[in-house]
Amino acid sequence: MKVLVIIPAYNEEENIEAVIDNLISNYSEYDYVIINDGSKDKTSEICHGHGYNIVDLPVNLGLAGAFQTGLKYADLNGYDYAVQLDADGQHNPKYISDMLKKIQENNDDIVIASRFETEKKPWSMRMLGSRLISGAIKLTTGKHLTDPTSGMRMYNRKMIHEFAANINYGPEPDTVSFLIKQGAKVESVQVTMDERTAGESYLNLSRSMIYMVRMIISIVLINNFRKR
Amino acid sequence: MSIVLRILLILFSFITMISMIKKIRSSKVQIEYSIFWILFSVGIIVIAVFPQIVTELAELIGVQSPVNMIFLIIIFILIVRLFQLTVQISQLEYKLKELVQKIAILSSDKNNETKKNPRE
Image (cartoon, rainbow over all chains, first blue to last red; front, side):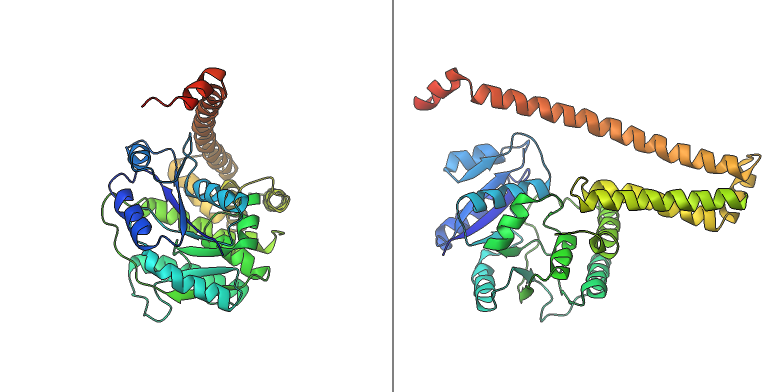
């Protein structure tokens, strides 16, 4: 059984070394691939210098395009499972084994690493967005996802192939919601996430607003008309 | 605002929305790009259903008739969108150029030779 850890990286020179060294020394049972999304800093040089397994995108594609590159890599190389791990260090690879256990036990299509499966979700501005998306998914699919915006998700072989080949399959809650509607089995496992150790988060207030509007319209309206 | 105009606005907004959704169904458009058209159509429908919004706005700005206000709003939104699209096309062209150049250099014979004898 082959597992691939996909690490999309955009300008992560401060974090990438720690994340990959941890993977190599403590989790050598998993293969990994870094997808450098046209970084302008030294991310690529650092990775090549250490001999890490890296795919350099010649131009910036954005997270969806970068992650899809990783899934195409997984699809071409016959991996059974693929999991997204952020390069900023907020996802801890120790939970991959839990996710793997879950996905194999229930024969799930997608397993999400959720911060709030057993823990309580706090009432903050950030979590308001998460609640709205959870609510929209519950409304349209009947399935309650505790942490739909978590980036750490594991996909089985069928999903790897489907995500690799299609348009409108970004690694976002609306795609997950669409797949649940179409009969995919999606479950969650409880994890704890670390705050990012260095660098700046991509999401500021206006970007978060645009993201929310896009997700809600996509989940509530567009997903009803899409065909698989 | 005449009732005929209001009905026409609603009708064309629905046609716009349905056409966009059809494009998504046939995998021709990315969802990101359809969001503008859906919000735009919903906005026009809201204006057609509640014309008081435009009437009051027209009075406030000093536009003679509410219909002109609607034209002004639509033209403004479309110009903003056109501006964004110009920027996007320019970026796309730049990315395409980068890609073509990189692929051409990578597949040239000279580069394949240096690959066999690494610099170090």
